[in-house]
Amino acid sequence: MLYIVWLGAAVNLLAGLHYTYCTVRAPTDGGAQPKPNPISWGIWSLAGWLAFFGQITEGVRGEAILTLCVAAVPTFIFIASTVSRHRYGAYAAISRADLTYGGTAIAALVAWRATGSGSIAVALSILCDVLVAVPVVRQAFNDPSSDSPSIWVAGAANGIITLITFQSFAFINAAFGVYFVGLCLLMSFLLVVRPRLLARRSASSERQSDAAAAFAGAFAADYLTWDEEDRSRRAAALSTYIDSPADALWGWSGRGHQQADLVLLGSVDFSPDGYYVVDVRVRTTTGPTTRQIQNERFPIVVEYPGSASLARQAGLYVHHVDIPVPGSPSRGAVDTAIPEGGWFHLQVPVVPRDDRWVIPT
Image 1 (cartoon, rainbow, N blue to C red):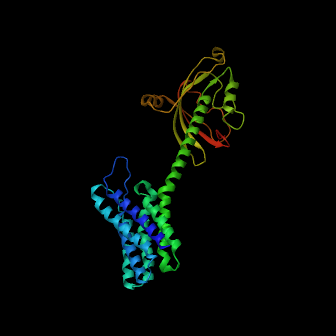
Image 2: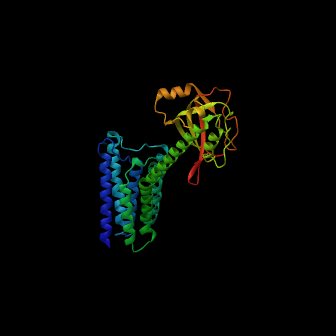
Image 3: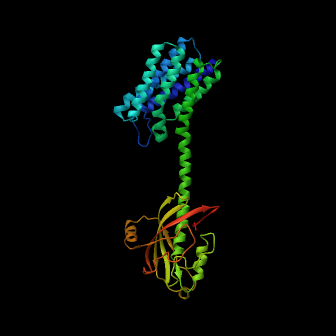
């Protein structure tokens, strides 16, 4: 079984060398370049060597192979981060917290030198490793593109293979290996799995926002379209947006003729109350009566704001319209003192319900 350990160690070493190469090479356009934290990787190398020599002191042989790789690979990366620090900027920013963790880790290393015990060396090396892992884990959580997952995936595979071959799971033999596998799995999740989950969630949220905006735009067009000679048409149209029959005079005085002919969809925000709020601007005209259009409706253009002049025009002559939410539809949502026609600005709340969208009322 020892050859399996050597194979895993070789894979881990190759991954470390590749990571080192990616760190020192000149960055290419659009290419990702690891930004290793020199404090973390430098102290990791010291901790790894301490653990390795601690195991050797206690007579551990085969199981120490993993620890040897854990010591050698960070040493390579630390050197690479130092070389590329001033050449390409391929390094992580060093914060005061990083220095604090690093100082505490060095104190743990000094404490081992004072004890001379192999078991204590392993325990202190794990403590040291955890302290300097915090900045790296935080960096992977905040900016997954700043690190390469290959070395962590390879490290997890190497660690698992090595643990399988252990004949004894005594603390001196297996403690560091178990910790190392856990750290590699955590980093692999942060660099590989979590970004994909976030991207999928973001894409789903974007689709939800687009659907909410489209629904709100359609509602705004029907909400600002009316004809005093055919009130039932507006009532029927608005009823499709709520869970109950709509009042034809919802937001309308019951007089005049108005037609929405242009809808601009703006930002979509998620309210703490659990519904989307869509910013909509609608241009309306005072169209002909129902008899004149012979029951035909004007075409309505729906656009996202892409023209600066059009957006300025919408902002200069806009009438703000308040839609009462939540609560039953009420009359007077449109200020009837404002002349009909022109631009109207609405904040339309919409909420998904079952397989459709509705206006919360």
